[in-house]
Length: 82
Image (cartoon, rainbow, N blue to C red; front, side, top):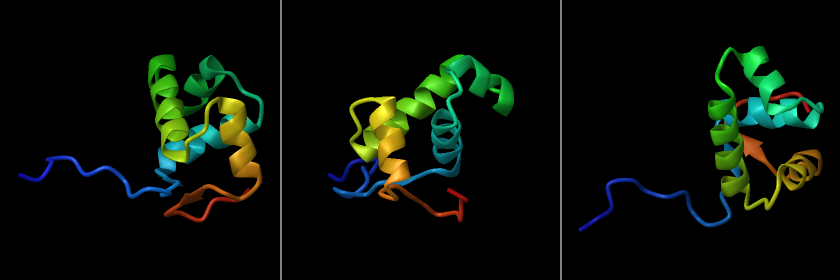
């Protein structure tokens, strides 16, 4: 029996557009509450998106996630100015 939800292949660090938005705002130094206000979503949703981005990128912390972004080691299906 195959699983209902497929996990991304190993090494796949492509973030969704919303995960990338949150990561970019984290890189600019904003806190979850400030990001929530900017995006018009709840702080809980920001925390969830940041957590998903960290998991997908195999980053231990938000700082590590931002470092991976800065190093160009994260991808997205969209063209995002870095």
